[in-house]
Amino acid sequence: MPFFIQQPPSADIPRTRIEVKHSNEAENRNQVNNFEFDRNLAEQVYLKDKFYSLKNEWKKQTMFTSSISNIIEDPNFKRIVDMGNKVIPLIIDDIDRAPSNLVWALNIITGAILRTNQRLTITEACKAWVKLYRSGKISL
Image (cartoon, rainbow, N blue to C red; front, side):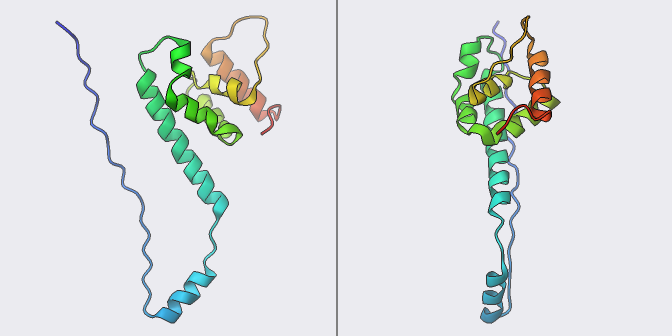
């Protein structure tokens, strides 16, 4: 008899919506002229949202995969790597909380390899990358 694992239904996450209502047109123009858009903040929010969306989909797709090449050839993993240096702090925070195969993305993005006398486990490699990053030895 086959064993089936049923995935939980996807959750719709409500998004914040901001509406501004003004009483007259002159007030509207004044408010718009005084509004400053923080592009840096918007980019950070977008980057973080995109990263976690790709990471979650990557984990879901490779959950039962043991092949390293299949794990890093996943399209979502590749998209994370394509995000470049900007995503390094997010990867560091993520592997600091929960060590994972995502540490391999750091090797690819930075072109750096951890040099040790012995093989490292995923957890050890994650700790080493976090330590290097927090000590300032990895520059963006």
